[in-house]
Amino acid sequence: MEWQPISESAIWDKINDAYLRMSPVQGRLWNAIKITPEKWQQHPYGDVGGGFWVVAIIGRRVLWFNDIEDGFNLSVYSRFGQIEQYWCNQDELEWAVQSVADILESGSDDSGRASPPIKGAFDV
Image (tube, rainbow, N blue to C red; front, side):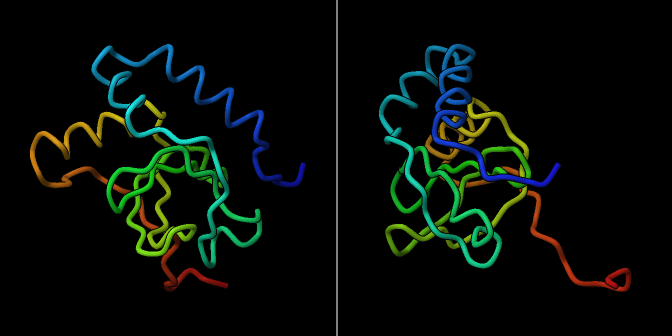
């Protein structure tokens, strides 16, 4: 089966399922930062699927779903509608919301991230 971008109804299912798993603190933060999901561009990885679903905005960061890797990520943006950083985390939404809570508490972003593919000796 060939990869297909996630549909809007499927992203809503992921959001709603995750909301039920959130702690009260995560749920309150989520309610403060969430937006109606919208597709944002991310070049070059998001091109094939018409972009990625952004589900929350806080400051200059967006929380978005990478449907290629099946996980939520937190990235910087400087132009509305464009995700600057591509990450391959396979985090559940509540984990990504907790990362935002940790950043707000500590003032720094110490969360781990999986990088995009890196060219190397094994490329064909």
